[in-house]
Image (cartoon, rainbow over all chains, first blue to last red):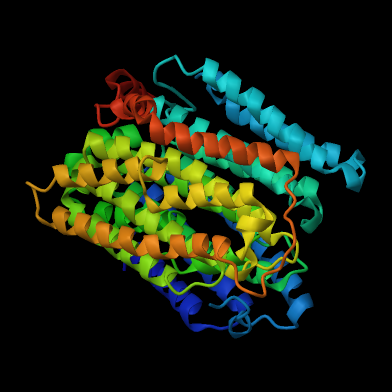
Length: 101
Length: 495
């Protein structure tokens, strides 16, 4: 079997959907962050595949930017989880309920 | 390449780093001085920026960074909003641990907004928006001893990262179908690209990311919680700077990059506009928390602005710029008052406003003026802004009757908004029996900021022609074909 652009794109779409499902269905903040990372990496895979098959390196450069931004986001996110865990002793979204009508 | 075009962004980042350094040596009691220093620095940047307004369009970094009239207009707006936010936050400094970092982060968020206004490439657009968003995660959760602030930060982070993921995936699809991410190159091939389903899906996913920033329905879920939980100065900055950053990009995409595709989607945009206005107005009716109410009001206002995007005519784009200018002054004035009234016991229930008319007549009058402008009563800024937006939509009625429906729904939303804005005014002037009888102090810096914002409301509202003229000049260059010379140079470099 010859692996073509379509195969990469299907895998990337699957990863994206899996990540989205994780964000919507899981209740632990850490798992939600992992799912969000999965979604960003799905986009990275699509960019690298397009870059390879269109012979245009710009896509690869974009991946570097996305990895950097994702790292910054995770750094802030984990700091928030730690702060929240110290206050509440929990990292579940059901317990984020102090903001209501 | 012309790196001097980035002088403003560069200065703002250097100012932020300088504040971070100075924070190390300044005793904790004198940290307010950092905010004054930053505001003064920004005033200097603003005068420098005003002096550089004259030259025409120019690009830097291989066409990624564009300085044109639209970018300059929004940059002025961002800097003015940041100065006001810094002054408001100086009165809130006691509630923000590590205040020096708060000032520095505010400046970094401003740098992101300035870059977003100049973005001429999907890569820069993404990085600039993320610079704003990631900074805001920290600004929202800055009161880390208060649980609601932390919760708001976590919620903002989850929704923000989700929107970023959608946007990045959209950009990947756009890159795959167009083989470029440059706005000019995409604009010159939009007729051909508009037929590619991959490109269209990519564009839709990118719009999801922008819809999150401007809190348009159905991507508005985060807005009420985050507005309520965040410290008041952050909420003010979210409602003005962050929202305007979303709109400058939306405006550029809709009017200059892919206007033909957007014109096909005018019904979709109108649908979002109508849902956003109705959701914001209906949900605001039952609110007790003033910050949460401002969150729903901000959603409703995003709906009015979307009318202007959907109209895709010059009146619409001019109206968006005009409305945003008035909206920034009005919202900042309202938040300046909210910050003073709620600061004492960190409670933002509507009852803390009870009897404000007696306790502090000037603050009550300022709040009344801001709310009346938000509600859209002539002759204040809010009225003319809505008037021009509705006019832009009505001009499109011959092409589709849906525009008429949208304007009617917008009128319903305005009438509903009268109820909840006037409810606050009623509480201020008709006090309940058990009202706290405590005067509200206003530090000088907050007073200056409030007075400037009130002056802004009056000037923008009473002399609309001046701002309309500026806004018209700013959007005049949108939709004209990209400079041919530049695109060719870029192609030559690619081969």
